[in-house]
Image (cartoon, rainbow, N blue to C red; front, top):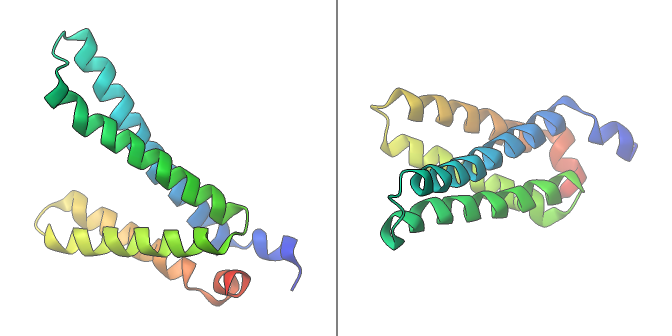
Length: 123
């Protein structure tokens, strides 16, 4: 199968955009939290660490998704690990509806990653 056909399969596109959106949420949450703490004059070293680390995690996740979009093997492995960890984490917080929704979305992304047309490109 041609590389351009594989890159436009719906499983590839859905997984790629889910990864971009998920990584952007971390970056936005970290950045907005820091800005709001500065505006409230409540920024202390203790308040700064968590939003900074979440933003940094978002940047790392964004690089993994970009590697996946570029066809790198480690990007595919990184997305599989990310979605598996999200799914496991959501199972521990099964009483919260947000965790259930994120778990379902990650399960769908994991299924799309492990679909034959996506997996064939990376393995």
